[in-house]
Structure formats: C-alpha cells, structure tokens
Image (cartoon, rainbow, N blue to C red; front, side, top):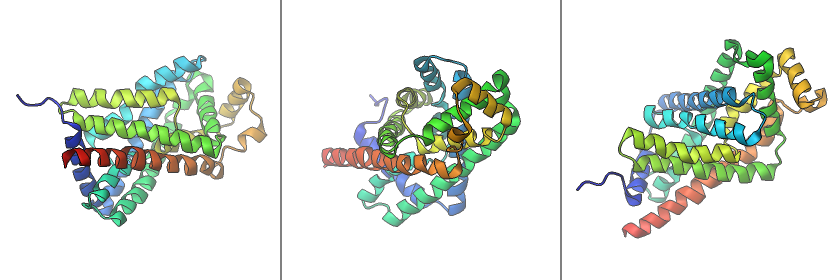
Length: 278
C-alpha cells in the first residue's frame, strides 16, 4: 500500500533537491519569484490587518490575524515563489555538498531584496486603493500602530522573536513537503503559521509589508490624527517610525530568522535525518 505522505527522510531529500534548484536559478527568475513571494506575504498581511484593525481585544485580534495570514505562504507553496525565510533551509543542500555556499548566500541576498520590492509594490497599491480609509481612517491608524510597535522592539526581542518565528515558518514548509495532496499542503502550512502569528513572533518579510505600510500611512495627516486620538501618540513618538528606524527591527529580526531557519531547523533536521538514513 502506497504511503499517503512523505516520511521525514524523504522530506529532507526533497528539500535538498529544492535547494539545488534554488541556487542555480537565473538571476532574473530569482528576482521575479522573490518579488512574487514578497507580494504574496504582503497580501496575507493586508487581509489579516483589515480583519483585525477594529478589534480591541488583543488575543481575539491575533486569533483573527492568525487565521488569515497563512494564505500568503499557501500561495507561495502552491503557486511558487522565493521566500527569504524558507530559503534559509538551503543550508541542507550545502551540508550535503550538493550546493555551493556562494550560491546559498547569493540566493539569500537576491531573494531578500526582491521580497522587499514585492512587498513595497503591494504597500503602494494598497495606499492608493483606499483600504487605509476603512473605519474612518482607523485602518490607516492601525497600520501606523503596528509599524510603530515593531520599530520600538529591543534588538534582543527582535532577534529571539525572529528565531522562534522562522522555526515555525520552516516547519510549515517542511510539513507541506510531507503532504502529497493540495488539501494536505494547505493544512500543513496553516497551523504553524497560525501559531507564529498568534504568538506575535517577528518575520522579516512580513515586516517589509507592515513597517513600510505604516511609514506610508504616516504621510497622511488624517491617519496620523486618528492614531494620536486612539493610541495617544505624539509627534515625537511618530518620528521614530522612519526608514532609518526600521533598521532597528530588520537587522535583529533577519539575523534571528537566519538562526531559526538555517541552524535550529535546517541544519538540525538534516543532521538527524541524515544519520537515520545511513
């Protein structure tokens, strides 16, 4: 009787093969796939924000966002895309000596900035779509609030939260490789991403959407005024929400994502399953 799912050893082998393919992609294709992935994650973030922006209970708001946000990774898994956080697991192919370290680094750098471009395109489209006008501008104020909270995180919080986040994201991708049917892949992605969003962990690509959406929303005086009325922000507070200020989030979160995905999941799973297969 044929197995209905792939076993752990098979999952690792499939991920190694995917890593070989990813490191040998032409640059133009890597860029386009990276932009698509960044856009897909942004669309999931945007939909989840709309659903939760007017919910005052934090736990309920995160529950709602967690139920919707996974659609971004589902689109990447089913349609295709190059996602920085998931590509941290290319380390398996490097450890297996099937991919070069230089190709791994090249992929991560190109995909990271391509994800950023994809997310920014969605940010700009959303700004002009009128979505931030929902609830008399409360949606725009919510975008500012989310971004502001992220740029205020301490480096240690961003780093450790980034580790935890990408452990779950990479587990979602590996679990999707275990499934052989579309429905199985969808549910495999859903639960780990559901858990990461509810827990409030930090994902560098998602933050490319959230932080820059807040920065763009800050250019609208009405959204700023609503944010001040709802959340008690001052001009001095909002000055911290800037492109330069965003680096205080992106640097530690990205490093944390790399540790969580490449070391605690990628390398650890490879070593364990490689020993089992020998």
